[in-house]
Image (cartoon, rainbow, N blue to C red; front, side, top):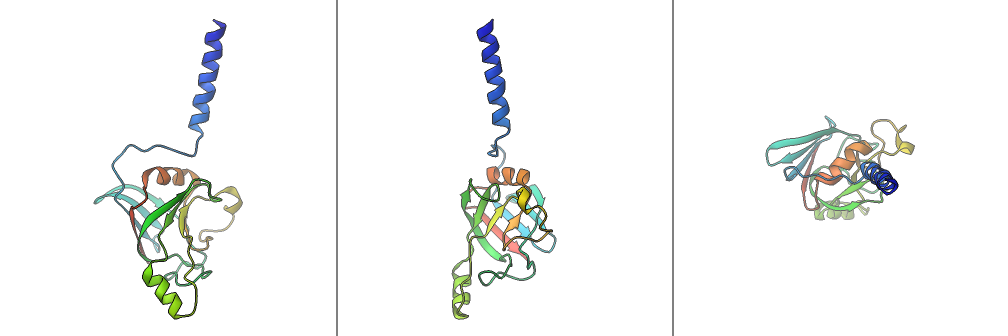
Length: 164
């Protein structure tokens, strides 16, 4: 009886710990495209033409216009892909956007500047919650809980289109 009690306590503890993990699983339809509409602050995860999920978000501290240079505070506009993920992000979890592309690099170079980089979709940990709606350096920010699902659903190689 005592061994059974110990086993049940351990199983309950492990089950509780598993539920609190930031790494979720997703077994639904594949996310085939991400659409981001900056002005409306809406992001859609799609399976072909069907919306699977939608999210509100915050942007860079200069939300209007296409990102062109390092430290301009803008979020890129255009067609990119999800190209990396960071499970140890300072911003809870994050998935990378392939900015800058060749055109972005060429334009910045023609102006004698750097295009910048490190653009992600990421969460918003406590220390950044007082930053207003548009507070990032050019990234797309959702809640930590939303980011857990996005991280599970969106795979590397998924196209992302970011519109003004």
